[in-house]
Image (cartoon, rainbow, N blue to C red; front, side, top):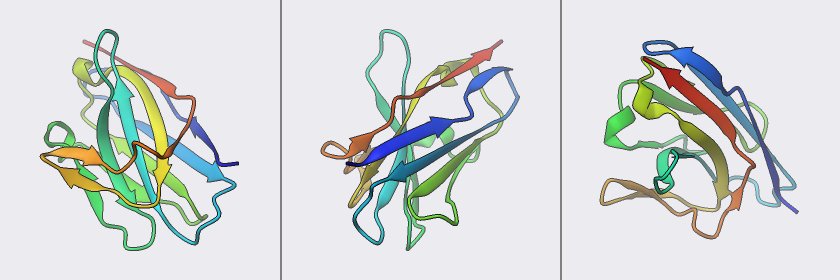
Length: 127
């Protein structure tokens, strides 16, 4: 059974930084995709960034390009999300997800509908 555990959320002021971490255990394949999604109160969940763990090709939505960086860790199915220049609109519950493939479709992160998900970590950015 695949289990994902996120860490690193917290509260910061606008302009600050946070680094999220996620590790997936029980992954049976040699590689895959890992992604970060977020959901603000009253809004739908949206993909923020994703990356192939072997090819290391990253995908970002436009609103975080230049501010967020997704990177794989040394351990299999470990991923980090470095978030800089945070804005109040970045506030939300951030979820890590794992899937066999991923990409961008019409500007949105795709490929995780049938993937595995973590419990989430809260990120709050105050103005």
